[in-house]
Image (cartoon, rainbow, N blue to C red; front, side):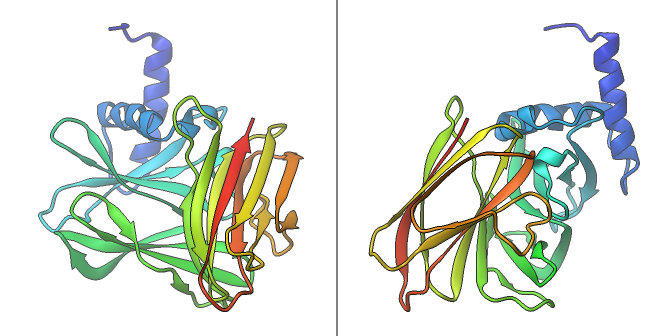
Length: 264
């Protein structure tokens, strides 16, 4: 095991300070363990760490009705945050390691009254632009939190959104995403990328139903998409952050698609 250097202790002290500034103090050892586990579970974090300080802040939360502690991590780097929305993860201590039980993205994380398998339901709010807010609800299934259908927030929304985070398998930089959409149920895919990387998108509409994708940049997912396309798009990115790919369809019935994503 590599001995701790002064640099390691300095980094861990920064992490501990970030945790201390949250609602409850988190020890240096727990902070280091969570950072190590997050890097394993979410490889993007290794490439998107900020220049100064840890890649997240954290706080103790109580989701389990048995009183045990869980930890909410909220990303701090621009590569994992847009102008409003940031990546969020919830961990609990398992019998052998830290367990990632929820991964989401938004700007307001709250608990709900309902309880499933001993854990309170949660929700997070995600803003595309000034005109819409998606409320993403999650229920615990005994192992992890599963997403419930998104619902319209207090701000007017034009369609229900199901939001997912794109994660590449270790050692790869491309993935094929399967989904289905209808006029009242669009689907969103969030991907973290860095300036000067190449992003390639290709959409296969299995039923020729007019499916298309829109790409929004990381600057708050503004109302004007960077691109609207029915087939493919390739671009060199001009800023780091989280990009949102929204797939929708004008067709009256459910339509299936495959979205190929590659980033280099």
